Image (cartoon, rainbow, N blue to C red; front, side):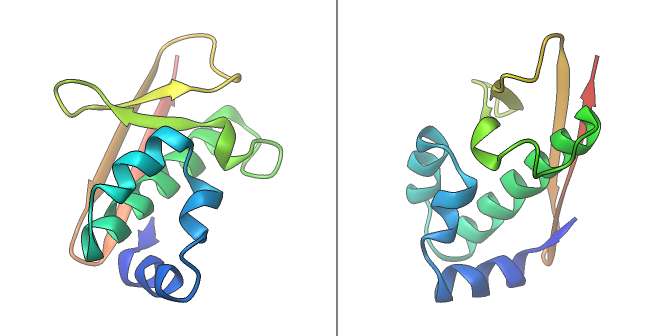
Length: 108
């Protein structure tokens, strides 16, 4: 879980933070939003990538944020579209409240 206002403050101080977390294709989507929606998007991707790394069993560190790409399919469902660490199926769920973003990843 990540606090959206915390991410928003980081973005205000360090706009380059998004490029550290997001892949090029994720950054395209990120830049299509403004203000709070950017912070929500980034917080959601951050938590999804963190959840993936934990489900994989390493945590962030052995796996880079750049090694994992989470994009929505044509129905808006988040999918891990890039990772050298996935061999089978995976399920991703990202949720937001006014203050928090959270994600669950199941690797099969």
